[in-house]
Image 1 (tube, rainbow, N blue to C red):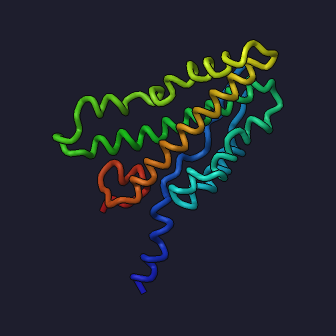
Image 2 (tube, helix red, strand yellow; image 1 turned 120 degrees about the horizontal axis):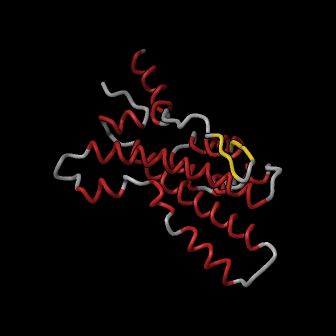
Amino acid sequence: MKALALFLMLPCATFAQTFGAPPVVEAAGVTAQATETDACINDQVTKGPGGLVTRAARSCIGRSARGCAAAPAVCYALEQSYWDWRIAQNYAGLQAWVADRPDGESSDTLRASVANPAAATANVALECALRIGQSGDSETAEQDTARCEMRETALIALELEFTVRQACEGDIAGAFAAFCGKGTE
């Protein structure tokens, strides 16, 4: 009976790690919380790490921005804040993973590479400026740039979370196991 109970609990334990409610953010005097996007992504998370790299997960990108009543560029910036938050949450997992590495495997370079979540998206603004700039000046350049930055940030967040959650499925202990929602007994 204990074995059956443990077997039934394993799928839940694998994906027990959750980030909680998305933050309330403000841009250009508009306050919002990306609840629609968060609910959509969390639904994909229940399918395992692979759920984060599906078309269904990519269709979650922009959900909150589409439901936003402010100017489109502001709405994209608000949702981009959500994706930045999600990246930061996963960087906390990466930091725990690095901290759990034996001293010989955890170099200063590795520790430094996971110290700053903003590094994950450092080139997004430049990439989008180049991409939108190549199409010439347009009436929607600001909106197009904001949409591009939000989408690229979201894709980085999904790929990063896929990798971290996939690592959570392994045999782990310590701080990373706690991050993953696994018991550390």
